[in-house]
Length: 287
Image (cartoon, rainbow, N blue to C red; front, top):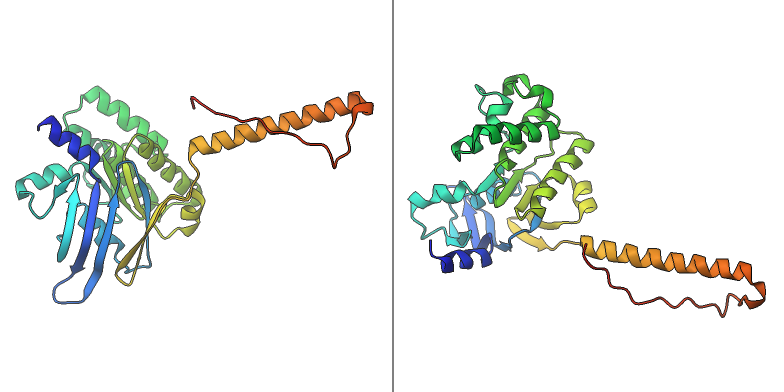
């Protein structure tokens, strides 16, 4: 591929929908005039009541469904004009955590997670290292040789998540990945997604867990009556948080030093009404 084409792809949205509609058979449209884009490195929660169309939207993104109308691009490729023989290569760049897990029952947890790496030709030693580390991280170190039918729903879900993220896809879609785990494990799994996001992966997580959404403050894609509403992230960036903390701590130290000087030399003590602490200007760098 020419370098100019690669640069164009990097600059293009990972996913772009314009006036997309979806209907099943001759029924009414379940998605209507859906328009949004996912920029590289973005993180969104997909919200909506049961039956709102969350799974249908995810299927459109990872090319399991074709829209009834409208424009969809994936990694800068117009899906309507992309040759069918090229679609599998696009799909392989998308990691998917399915609501129904879709694990291979005749393979162990280890082999299910290792499968994407083996297909990609990764060295055996690297496969063993990365899969073992990831399964340990999601709390399945003691179940690496277990087959899916012997695992609980929550354990199978964690295997599915590990399989989806092991190859560090450019786009990760997760359909209710925290639905069968407790709150502590839910936050742990979402933290895994956030770490992957920091490495540049674009993330979309479908969830009913509003507490999780409110606490983490990422952007949201909300479906209702077939229409999509996009809300951008509310969370303060890490740099802004550190800057605010550093400025606040320095101001607290200066206030404390002023109080100490007042105690040492009471004759110079000013009244509370005239005492002023002039904050310095601050620049926080190299975080």
